[in-house]
Image 1: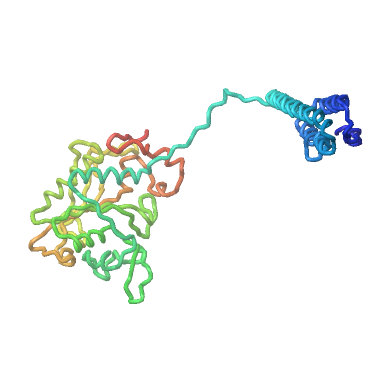
Image 2: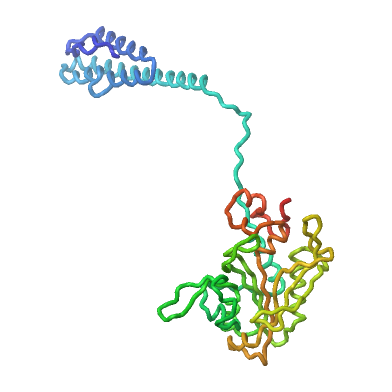
Length: 374
């Protein structure tokens, strides 16, 4: 605390002598020098130079002095104020250096610690698979079309030659939505084929498109989830035939699986929207619980295809006597599982960052040069 005796010191009178100023300077200097920390120094500064400070009060007495006395007292008091202000600044700098030195002596930084690893994002295998597939089909001249996830029954079933009582409409396979005020029924689309219907209705042949997107079916196990991804293809013109379909799918499979002369087999099948229809198998081998694509005496089914049914063309306003074409559809998630060695489809949708860090891809590494993580 400040010396209480200073509070009782009377103001300087007009007869104040220079010896009084010397005593005042000595007294204030001692008070400033006695402040041994920043808080006490601030208290001393306020007591000396504040609005009611010791030196401020003395400066106020100048007005009551005669002219001759003021000529001597004024400069003397200003000189004391300047010296005291400089002394406070010097004392403050010294105390700050002292405080910093004490702080540094108590704190240590271990510069040998390793830096914190920054987490890096990754491209999901499904996103990478779609990107690779679109790149391959773009090289073949296909364009991309997209459509709504919530589809009406006509685009999702009727136009695709799937009548009202067809098994594909059963409740255990399809997510039905509430009907609108006019009784029109909607579903979460069970395939992206509805976009093919919209494309044929809105565009004139020739048509050459692929349709990627989410689809929904009520199913859940190691190879099925309620939401998954498909990519379908459609070609409509006057000259396309089954040979073009086989050549297109063979070229795609060899490019996607990066296997030259990949064995491919077309098996007769049935789909309401194509005639004739086929399932496509690729050659593989299964040994010791592993799967190797492109070699061996076994087969693996990967997609369905066929020539577009004449009824589908008619439903879209295209004359089947003048135009024909082919269509195909494949599960994106299944292809990703096969290519990247993912054993369970369900893990793709569990939002596990550990899983993604293992199976994901560098966003700056394009598909053409990217390699799967080992």
